[in-house]
Image (cartoon, rainbow, N blue to C red; front, top):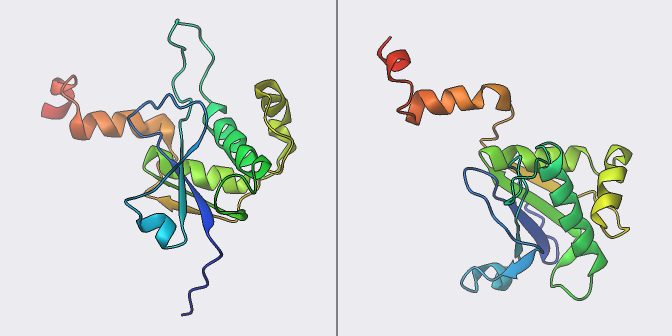
Length: 163
């Protein structure tokens, strides 16, 4: 099997699992020289995935995380030539809860259902489709994920665990 590598693809990393990142704009991070030297550019984007702001204001959950990723993709495309990498080869990656997001981002590229949300955020007028996604152990059944997590790691449900 022949591996075809694009000229410095841009790889946004989805970190939504168990941690809250408060990053306003994506930033380029050199992985000890290895990513840039290997022709890979990594960008980490903080995602909204809680239902309340720091001041307690409710804003919901979905589709905030996908909208955040679309805003990041549009930001990368809008700054083509300023940021390193080839904006035509954006590959989104993620693990666990963040593993579902690259698939959703890829499947919803340039979908007009998100236009109102993107306009509200002031996102750049750029396409938000991506070249590929790499979804590692994605959690897509979020309705039941909390129960599974509690079963494996929780201590609040000791009567249930005993049964």
